[in-house]
Each structure stands twice: as structure tokens, then as C-alpha cells.
Image (cartoon, rainbow, N blue to C red):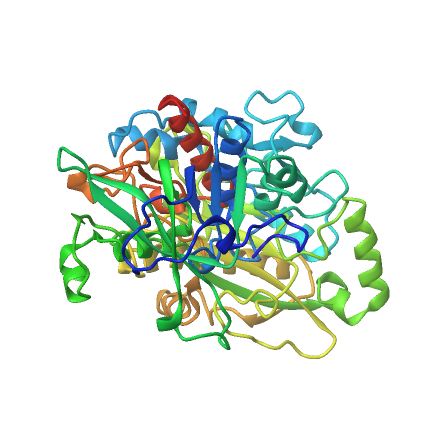
Length: 547
């Protein structure tokens, strides 16, 4: 649960009576215009935007299903947009109308307030949205400064501002972080739905916490078409509470629509429990199939491989834990907004297309010729990302491995991320090949830092740049990126689609999905900003339907 204890939440009993029969709704249930399932960032966007309209009643249900992770602590303050080509492909590859760059840029702008001076006159950045963002360019550690310099010697150009849609797709630069004007990190969900807003709109917005949506109430209309009439609920209890069989079920009706925002794991779970999913799977679980849909069949994630070097303790964020005075300095710099020393999020990131990497020389192809600079061409979407971190994987549990550095030693990490996987649900041979290219380039960058005289030693890196060593290292160290997406994709029915271009679940009226589940493929960016955009677009569609 993200909300502070003072957040105004309702008791389940206060808005609904327990059912006399577990699967039979009451004759006169409590009814809301919209029921939003999931209190993560997408759910908070919907709850805010819908309850801003005085003629709407909104129920936001959080707990249980929405507890699945949608971000990782390493990336939860990173505010990154995919390049325009990502969205141009929605139309060119998937045939989706209303999702080109020009169609989505306004939704991105509505979500943010960019505080970076570099963006004051940028037409593609927001000025009055709920989420405050800015670049933090005060680099505290020499390891990061050296890595930044070395990257540019590999034909990786530097950019001046983050999330500029017209910059080269392969580049190094500082990233936007969700940091407010006081210098404090901000979680996008609380930026959209703070307690003050909830209190001011409590006549239109009801929030249920510690509540599980067990299934959707799917019925048929006079024409034999399926529609969602409401949701079945249970209290979420601790392990010391009653057994599951003792739970009392409750029911709430939806006058207009139900919107699933529980994330790429829990949203398909709820749909399947409600009879919306692959017939073979549902039959094996004795769940009657309402609509045979490929729910959960196209799940994707990013994949990470960390390369770690030991370095002077003073050049690592480990110094803040071993030196109280350094930690205190870092605290004040964080409060003043000049440093991200106390947080795990990277300040600078390399974005790169693996097709530009020369594996033999460990360099990057010059981008100054041809169409390599065109951000609207799908082939230019980067498939690799390097996060430069003044820390070790022991502070960033991506792979579950916890290497321990020698005493009084700092750590520097290049976290190589595959951000455009080819397959769904696993690491394929093609993905290993792409990661291998990235790991090889990162290894060469580390060697160049050592040649420049920077005092760092190999700690967790490939034994050599030989093909077998790189492949073995990738297979041994690869881990999930926790950027979970595309389990209910927006595609055509013949291409594995679950929702249409208006985010409506196929074959069922009054039901939409508006979270990371709906991306046709996992975006080549961290998912916070794109997921917020999806929710903002959903609000547009609801308005079109006479909200």
C-alpha cells in the first residue's frame, strides 16, 4: 500500500453488504459510475482524472491483486519516454489508430511538470502536470564522471536534455527523475493521488484499501453480448486471519465501466479468474470460458546483466553507509535537490542500438550518415540500455545475487539491460546474442577507464571478450528487469490481441484495461511514464464515450 496512514479510505462494509450467496449479486447493490481495480500508478491516474468531474462517482480498489510489482526500486524514480518510432510502429506494425507520436505526446505532457531549465521552452514537455521531473547533473562520484567521458570516446554522443524526441537514438545523457522542487523523490502514484486531493474529492472518490477483487460479474445483455455489471470483493487479511473459505464476499456494481489497472501480472490473473482467457488453460482449472482470449500469453520484461568493478570507497555510494559524515552531506545535497546520492536511481544512462556495435573493435558505428538519426524509424529504436551506477549489485538486488566487495572498497556497475526483447516469457537465443554485444561493449568501456588511469579492478566481469566468455557470462548473470508488460496486448485478434485500440477488452462490454499489460510489446524505456500515458489516454477514450 503506497498511501500514508492519513489517506481517506473507506471500510468495505460501509459501501456494501456481504452476499447471502457467494456468486449471486444483491438486488440493490451499491453502484458507482466507474470501478478502478488496482491502486498503482495507472489506477491513481484514472481515479484522479475521473473524480475531477463532478458528475462522476469513482471507486478505487487497492490490495491483493495490485500488490504485484510494476517497477523496481532502481528505476521507480526514472521518468523515461520511448522514442517516437515506438509509437509510429503501433500504426505501421500493429495497425492501431490513434497511437502515433502526435497522438500520445499530449498525454505525456499532461502528466508532468518539467522543472529542468533546459526544457523551459520545449514544446514537447509538460508545465502543469501532477508529476514533477528534472535532471540532476551534479555528479558526486569520479567513477561516474569517468564512465560518462569514456562513453563519448566510443562514438556515443552526449545529449543536453532528457526525453527530447528529436535527439539521436543512441546517446548518453542525464535522465529525468521524479524529484520535486524541494529536492525530494516523488512516487508518481502519490503525485497523482495525494491525501489532500482525496479529501477534497471524497464526494466523488471512494478508496477501498486491503481489498481483493476476486472476479468480475460478467452477464449477457438482450442481444446475447457479454458485459461487466460489477465486481466481487473480499477483505484482504493477514496470515493470522481466517482461512480463505471463511472470507465473506461483497459486491459493488458499475454503472458505466470497470477499468483494470492492477498491472501486467494481476490484471491477466483477474481476467482469467473471470472466464476471459485461453480456453485450454481455463478448462484445465475448471473455470467456465466466457471469451476465448490469449490473456497472459505475450508477457514481456526487460533483462539485466551487471558488470561490476571495485573502486575507491570515496567514489561509491557505499561511502554514505560507512561514513556517517558523508551520508549527512549526501542528505543535505538531496534536500537541496543537487544530488541523488541517497537514491539508487542512475543519473546518467546510455541508450544504444545493438546493430551499431562492432563486436571486434568494441566501438560504436558513426551515426552521422543515412537514416540512423531518424527517431521516427522503427529500426532505430534502441534495444540496449547501460545504467551507470556508483554502487554494486548488492545494493540493487536485480539478479538475486549478492557479491560482497573487500572491506573499505567501493563499487562501480554498468548494468546492461535488454530493453527490446524479441520473445515473450523467456530469454531466447536472439536475446542472448543482443545482450552479449552489450556486455562486450560495457567490458571495453571498463577497460578504457582503467587505461585512463582510473583505479578500479575487475570484480564481476567476463574473463575476456572472447565470444564464449561473453555468452557464458550473460547466461550466468542475466536477471529480470521488473518492467513487466504486454500480457493483455493492444493488437488485432489474429495477432494475439486482448484489447482494442480504445483499450476495451475484446468480446466484453463495459470493461477496459489501462496499465502496462496493454503495450503491444514492452517499451524500450522504463515503464512509469509510458504507463501514466496509457492511463491518460484511457481518460480520453472515456470522455469520448460521454463520461
